Length: 342
Figure 1 (tube, helix red, strand yellow):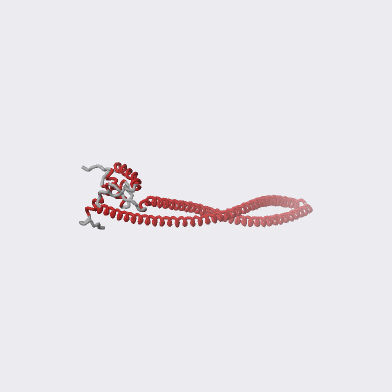
Figure 2 (cartoon, rainbow, N blue to C red):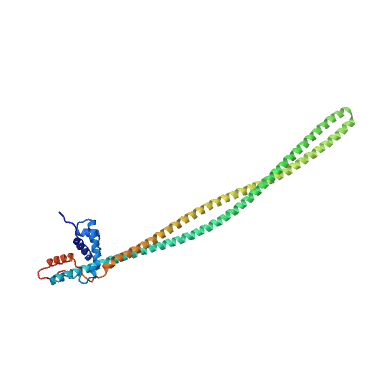
């Protein structure tokens, strides 16, 4: 049946770990002893830590018992010096390696932070340029919109004038048509009168012929006047149609320019949004790099604090049951004659 863990077992394991240059912990003490639960080891290890300061400060606390022979005392001092030297070398190597690793991590974090700052500056400049381009494009689009509105107004005015002229032309054509019909009726009446006059008398025939001649002349004048008015209105109509076509072409070109300007403005807004998102990502990377640098510096400080005690030379030897047992074991392992071997 295995016996339980005692305070002496825990103290011996902790002293052995300290001589090896390691910080005694619950798991390391359990591994050194080979058994025991954490709940059993923890209070004995706390007791060992609470008495460690007094044991170090007491000048005679770690001195060998007076009854020990000189060879035993010399062997114990020799093993203690060797263990202390090995512990110092291991601790110094660990501290140097930790310092090199921490310096490398700090340098990498600083490089990453510098890259993030340069990228942030570049993105800020690009963002400012995009904002400036967007403002210029917006002003140009506003100017094009004003020109488009003015052209639309002119087109509406010309269209209205064209409608008025068309109405006037239709009215003139209707009046001329009425006048021609009336003239034709007059000619018909004159023809009837001429026929009647031929049957009645020669003088009446001459009078009617004269009336017919006057009516025919009037009809010719009216026909000429109608043709002149039609030609004039036709010319004005052609001019108005050409002007309307030019205004329609200008309006279509302005619409295309406005559509292209709107598309370009949308693209610039998308680029600005992407630049702002890149800027936010770079700021997040810089914050992560700063946090990583701070964590590395804190880790280095904690490492130095934890290993500062082990790096200092211990001026006194420990007096405990574990040392006595290790010294006796060393004496038994020595060759005959009391010669100490390394």
